Image 1: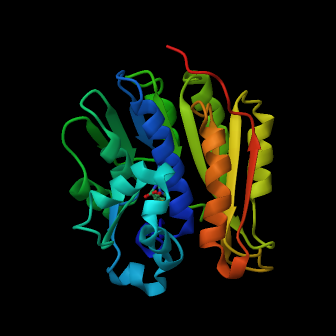
Image 2: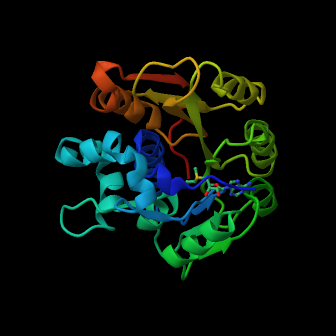
Length: 285
Ligand SMILES: C[S@@+](CC[C@H](N)C(=O)[O-])C[C@H]1O[C@@H](n2cnc3c(N)ncnc32)[C@H](O)[C@@H]1O
């Protein structure tokens, strides 16, 4: 039974990290005329209305995109991410927030393809309502299995976003297993994997990173953003993104971005960040 609904968390600090990194990678792919394929293994509804009662329940966006949106002129490095948000809103308002599929759709050109997978019956209906048309394929299926079956994609360059809810412990194992198989089939793809930083009793981020390190991927960046201290028993104080085959200079971009995000979104000055790994490789063909 799938119970997770992303509307409860739309626009929170974890979405900011995930979608900011996603937008930077898509911008890098758009630097060339050659088409790209974007694959979202856990797409969610595609976009969210911040006034919706589910989103208002904890109004997590007030500690995420809302404070950033107010000072967006001061963040030229996030212009692409903000443009994707602006495309959903009237004037300067922040009534709607894009999920990862609508962030990707914002960057899509005629030569690019989006492949979106979602398993939840209602959420896939919402996704079909929010996106569709030329160059967009929506699959109602398991994203882990689906990814391996779809690789290598056409066009041959592109990005895979893996963003499971991690409600099931097996999601952690499936991320590492799936990545290993996916990477064998499509070694040149860029893969971005989101994961939560949770309270001490339940956090599994270290195990996930160890499992990924054991895969022996050559170029892997790991960016983490926390907005408060780690609790003992429950709660998510931050999140991370692992990026395999990061675009050129993403490490430098993140090294500039993460400290500022930690300062702006950190509660009571308790924000933190980390950036590990190797990324750089000059662009080719
Ligand atoms: C964190 S949300 C995705 C949010 C979205 N990527 C975004 O950034 O806007 C995770 C989604 O994965 C879906 N899901 C859970 N297990 C899945 C699976 N095995 N395959 C595909 N989708 C799954 C859930 O229904 C949920 O909508």
